[in-house]
Amino acid sequence: MLRALTRDVKLYNVVVHGLAFMCIFMAFQTASSFNSTLLTNMGFGDLGYNSLAVIYAVFSVANFISPFIVDLTGPRIGMALGGSLYCLFIAAFLKPMAWSIMVSSALLGLGAAVLWTAQGSFVTLNSDENTRGRNSGIFWALLQSSILIGNLMAYFVLPDSGKVSDDEAHQFYMILFFVGCGGIFILLLTRATPRPAIEDLDGKPKSEPRLTLWESIRSTFMLLITPEMLQLSFLIMYSGLENSFWAGKYPTTLGNSDNSLPSDFKPRVIALSGIVLGCSQIIGGTLMGRVADRFGKSWVVMIGLACHMISFYAIFINLKSGYMEPSLGLALVCSFGLGLGDSCVNTALYAILSKKYVNQSLQAFAIFKCFQSALAGAAFGYSDPLALEYQLLLLAISAIVGALFFARVDAPSSAGYAPLNS
Image 1: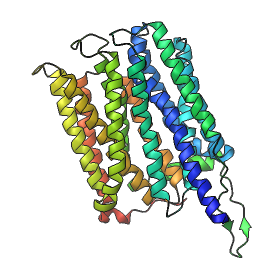
Image 2 (image 1 turned 180 degrees about the vertical axis):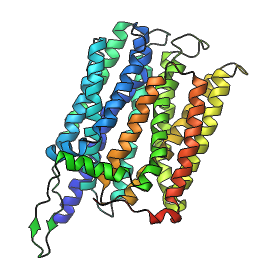
Image 3 (image 1 turned 135 degrees about the vertical axis):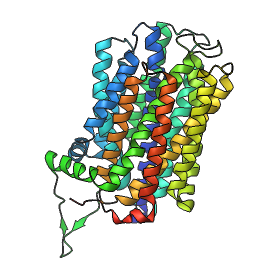
Image 4 (image 1 turned 90 degrees about the horizontal axis):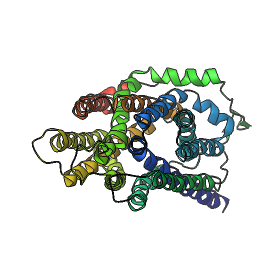
């Protein structure tokens, strides 16, 4: 009876924290998609891109200390603290000033590292061998629903015109702020889950030694320099580049803030693109896990590579080549391909890291977020000055290199590499 109750509490925790993340990222992802366009309309120039660059740069560095912070606070408090900094960032846009947006961006970078490290620990505590796949699927579906729901909200809230007024922007961010705060409240409804007991040789329980800050950083770094992790880092870095593209550059281009595209392209199209992308993310996340289990993780990466290559080429032909009049319909098809490919890449990365680093999952996922956020920050930094066609070329090259190294690690011949256990 007690065992059944514990299992129910764990399922409850997985669903509730998934709903909380859906609210937090419904607010943040929607705000991020519109930040650059709205700030440009308000006369802040490149502040939106610079803000995103700071977020991901701090996020990257903070991943080396986030395991230590979460060890001190515990995963539930860690998630709440990290999520609160997401809400603080959104609040800065209620009355935008350059200094407050940049400071809140740096704090958000720290909060993101703590939030995601705590989330990985929380799911691990509430899963076992028989429920790991189910719980990951529940969380992924709820998380990716945030993109769909958030952009549906934006589509109906924002005006059907080419310009968003200051009052309309304030109302928009106020709604997002309260949605994010709702997510923090839902996180507080999760229940405490006891850590698995650790026993000594005599079968008596013993306490697990807590790593110092230096020991935590060293453990993460030692895993980072192993051959397998270094090879996986190429696809991880690509995931950061393509994430910044579909979350920043591409929707901003469709928003047509510089009036370089036909009148069909306007700020409201950003939300429409996000709706399509969110649907493809949910479809991909639902299907690709089964493909990985049945045919292998490398096949999932190859499917994602094909989706992205076709999308990159179609985006170039549609928006930059001059061979055709830019088509909104084709642009939305490309949004679907970007989302489907992104779900393939991330599903494969989560699967291979979970399999190969069972005993070092905290460090492995911290490294994953470190590389991903570092390259996303760099991409947001060059997003505005670098022409779209050159960004597409860089993405295509990075995708091919990342897929090749991933296949090498996933192949049986790479099994000789063993992660360090120090």
